[in-house]
Length: 207
Image (cartoon, rainbow, N blue to C red; front, side, top):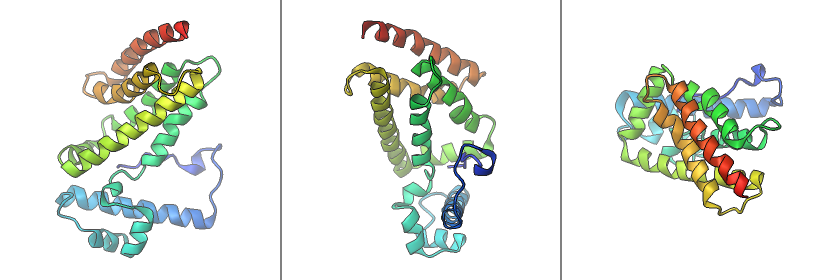
């Protein structure tokens, strides 16, 4: 997807990468950028793996070392996005509720990536208009929801299969997508998470 990776140089909390890691990261980004450019220009189905490898100036073997499937080329930041999502819950400020932490995450990452970005709009159209990418994206969404529900349960002292944790995870992931269609997406996100906050407070009182 259009890159939302933070710049390590601009983040004093991030550990500096070694030369080898920087080279691997640059190669991976070059492959993902080449793939997305070709997909947006010609359509996902019309572009082959060898064309992407040639455009990124790498071998197909190198490409598959970074991306196990063609669909993964479109969702290249999947693991990083999930890590940031879980960190929002596990590393939230003392006294901050889980819904509030997830709201902050939605406003500063997911919503910020979509607002007024023509490239992101084109990416979204590519995914929604390609069955293989829609299916892959849905599997990722479900995986993120499962991981988030588990983190919420751990942080709240609730059972791993507590339906309240599962529901909060699903709603929290869905809220930014729904809010993006509103005239004021930020306000829509805040209102949606306000509703989640009140419901979650009741759950915590019961626990």
